[in-house]
Length: 386
Image (cartoon, rainbow, N blue to C red; front, top):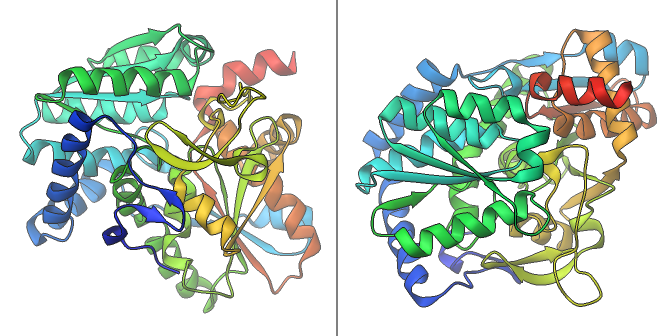
């Protein structure tokens, strides 16, 4: 079931690189540099150093004892990406790509962000390594996530509010790609999700695979067996692909991606090209990307990483939808029972885990990838609940 990069970035019929010729040359250089360094002992050692000393890995796999008792059924474990420096899984990939950018001689880093967590992670890495940083963010998202905008600016990044289109994540990606076309000679695009033209989905997967590498070892130490299912929220799909990677070949482990019901790209999308790659995409009657709206800005995207489309198509993974109000309820339940405030994105995965746990027995084990913490969402939730 593993997907090799040698297939030129195709996962079944999904993936590829659909970009202008000048940008394709940039993608080719990026691919060759990534392949040169990804297994290089010195590069790996530096990456591991920063994951440990700066990000704070390895993070725990926490048994949610109170939640398990409250819900009944399967044991629920939480993979604690919320405990990483900057508060989410995004920093894993940001550190990996910044080390690559440094070796490629880039002086300027650009990125897109929805919920702001990838923007914060990128701004953090740029501050650490002394690089110029420009973050594109949809205008609506800058308003929803004003605290993260301030954090990025505090870290020295320039945040560009994108007013085109819906002013959401899709529009931020559009602008970042436009910037790259114009400035590719001195600019590195640090893409935050497992989307985009090849080689980005494979690069992001490589750096996020640390999540499942750790959780697999941790669950075997704690329980002496593999989990029944891994559950992760899926927007673009970076935390989910990282949470799945080391279990893809374990056919008895269910892989469950959880989408917002308001942006069900995998569940209801059709194969189409968006942002330089082919994947399941929500289209309107004119064949344009469909407007989406989720309470979780990081899941507000009309497509998904190509490997997720392949995993669905092949039947290896299953994808379900959760409504905003269910995620909001799960946000409160986890906070009250475990003293852990999850991101609204992660709350979608928690909500499905609560449903699934009830259907299983106490011999079953669920691992929920808690992709981020909810500090960034508290003000938004406060307003919604009022």
